[in-house]
Length: 203
Figure 1 (cartoon, rainbow, N blue to C red):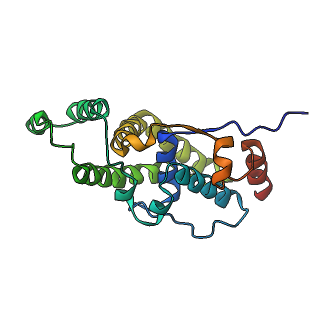
Figure 2 (figure 1 turned 90 degrees about the vertical axis):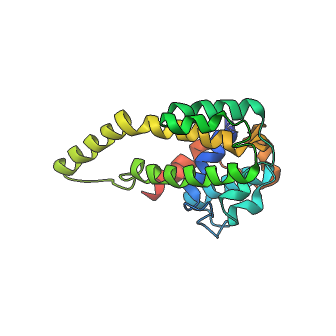
Figure 3 (figure 1 turned 180 degrees about the vertical axis):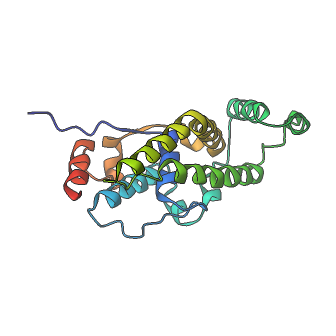
């Protein structure tokens, strides 16, 4: 018999994915019922427990600006400015020569809010067909074609935006947590395999 394991890791990148999945484009959590045992609400409770471990549990009701750390290391800022320069017209990239342009928390919050709203739009595109279980061959062809277009032309943009957003989140998210470490914060004692079985049972 396979050993039951909670072996996932929560880090800044996974927190960002939680923000994309479970909050609206302003960063407010969409589900208010965290006592349900449906697969979706278990996922939300996982996210909420991780946010609590980072000391950000109240932020999920207050908008994106509250996710941002007070501090952001020089190393993170350098990487962020490099990514921005690679994607800005020349006349704007010179603005980034000012070392203080994004050091202030207000500026980082504004940048995060802007990029997050756009990234949420791409997330909707990526998951357009996630609820489709059966369809005609014609619809299937359309779905496969648009999915391939996303993978070839849009996913790279999503990946760059994800990295920018993680950097903007700042230093509070430097630590990673195992799922076992998150149990005292209310993390559901449900393995990925058990959650997967629940999702399949609900189909």
